[in-house]
Every structure is written in C-alpha cells, then in structure tokens.
Amino acid sequence: MSHTATGRRTAAPAVVTALRVLSVLTVLVLLWQFVTAGPLVAGSQAADVHGTGAIVLHVVSGLTMVAAALVWRGGAALWPLVVAALVFALSFLQAYLGSNGPISVHVPGAMVLTVGAVLVAAWSFTGGVRGRR
Image (cartoon, rainbow, N blue to C red; front, top):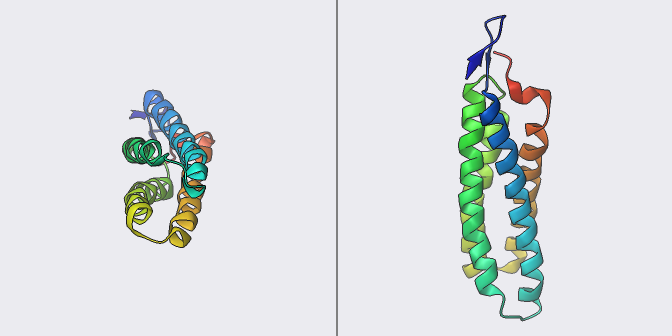
C-alpha cells in the first residue's frame, strides 16, 4: 500500500499485478473445468482430471480473494473482494455438488462461478483497482 500526493491510499503495483494474474488464472481454470466436464457428461473417465481442476480452482480462487483483500485495503472498492470471496466459497459447494448433487444444480453453479470470476478479472484491469480512499 502506498500514498499518493493527495494522501489517498493506493494498492501497491505488485498487488494489483498479482490480482490481475490470479483473477485471469481463475477464469482459465474455470475454462479448463468446462473443457473437462464435456467428456464426463459423455461418460468418459475424465473425473480425475476434472477433480484435480477443482482443487486448482480452490487454490487459485482463494489466492485471488487474498489479492482482492489487499487491493481493497489499498483503497479500492469492496464489491470485488466480496465477489472473489463468493467465488472461492462457491467453488467448494460446486465440488460437493459435482460429487454428490444433481448435475442440474452443478451446471448452473458453474455459470455463477464463471460470471463472478470474470467480473473480478475484468474489474482488475480498470482504473478502480488503484483505490480512491
């Protein structure tokens, strides 16, 4: 965190870069999950690859949430942190539903995760990420 000439707090450039990289990785992992879900629906044995992707999603979305928290502490808006936290939490619900729940709930849940992850990633490339407190 740094201070501008006007005394406003801003997130450090390295933290902003970390948020950008991690949020894009979250979207890419979700894309991977979509690619590996297709063969599962068709009856393939891709469950191990899809399950590994779920673990990677937990890690990357959790790190995205931490980076969003640091950016928020640097003066940025709160809503991207809330959305990143929801994506992280919902990734665990998605994993549970993928193993134990109906596919009719798992698929729409994946869409919600994707919308949230894309929102955070897109926002991370706007001027609002620098903070305005």
